[in-house]
Image (tube, rainbow, N blue to C red; front, top):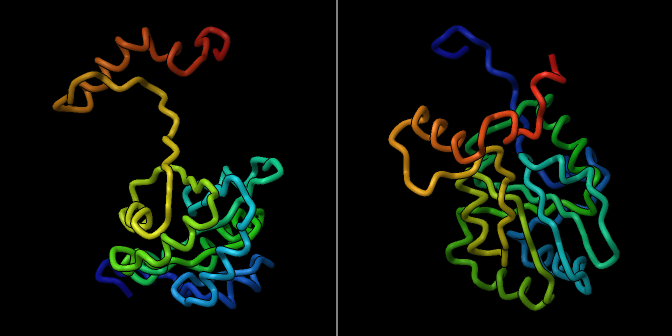
Length: 191
């Protein structure tokens, strides 16, 4: 029990064998050199590889064109510090199972692992991933040749930093015209 008297859920460790069993996909652990080479070989000849982290599961629903691949990417460093319950893993694994493979990387090793980046650069593929604020996944760009896809914005960004959310919202809403316009909605038709 926690200090608040709440029973924390049993957490499941990030385990390649368990993930393969749950998703039905080949899992490549990039921390193991033979798996890293096999992961590189699995995307050889692809022009574009969309790396999908657990906060981008909507991308698993998108179709891929010939020469493209969708690969799930999990950060072992994050998951060792922040365990997930069985229910959360089941939800995430359902999305990940729509990918072609799962790669496990470790953000704690990326700063010193330039060999991995060199191996993936040899594929000549473009690797992209939706931006995230999760610092571990941001670190992964040091060991994988990533291009960040920007999160779609509802409101435009003001030209200058705003001291508070209220000021940001006021400035952004002024730039957009109004909230209905920014959301492409007609308030009268919704009511």
